[in-house]
Image (tube, rainbow, N blue to C red; front, side, top):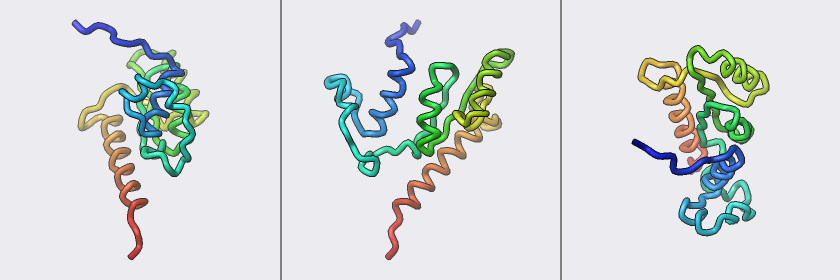
Length: 136
């Protein structure tokens, strides 16, 4: 049986995204928690938000949805079938452009979310390759 190793608040989730964005390793972040606050120019950050894909399933993911979408990345909401309250909440996230779309948490080859995730990864990879290309 697995035990809970760590509880993460919505504020910490965004902090982790900034650590990824700024290229701060988990061990460096653990040793120096305030390292995430260092100023690094957007163009010098190794992993832009535009290269990120975020999948979340609840209200604590709202700040991350917003951060990723505003940064040019892709955020998907997932909700369990039959949970109308979750579906209604995510509908509001769609209307305010906090998530790209919302789906049941099915990631298989024939599932809608699985297909969209594979397309998002492929698109992100293509964009990275195109941005990295230099004219000769």
